[in-house]
Image (cartoon, rainbow, N blue to C red):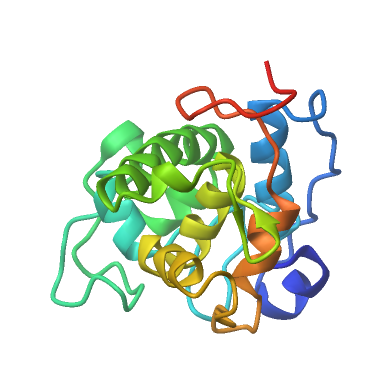
Length: 194
């Protein structure tokens, strides 16, 4: 979700964080930029589709991460399977009240997302140009976080011509570009990254 449009989609009275990024291009800076893009850094954010927290996690992601039990529809974001108690989180309210758990979940999620990227064979496109866009691992992770590995695959297969957007109209290409170029410790290193 874009930061500029986040406030129209977030239902929360909490103030967003000030954006203070670590050194440019670092893994920590990637998470700062992703938080800002998803929720303006608001750990208590809940959007109109019931994606929650600073990183706007949905039910399916929280199931993959072990925070929520699977229910009949993993994509409806009603969390009706209940929370598992992982890291002391037993409800949406617990998750929203715990920035450290959200940050830890985001770090774990990126590793899971990279494994999905590898399983789909998309890792071989790291640092390649697709439709005039360099696919850095951080941009690929951001795109996969936004809409899943299938959307990234569609982008690659169309040579970047597919106009893939989230339900709020955010183009996948924006995530690839705007969140690209950060160092990802478990992914291939690109030019100029240490």
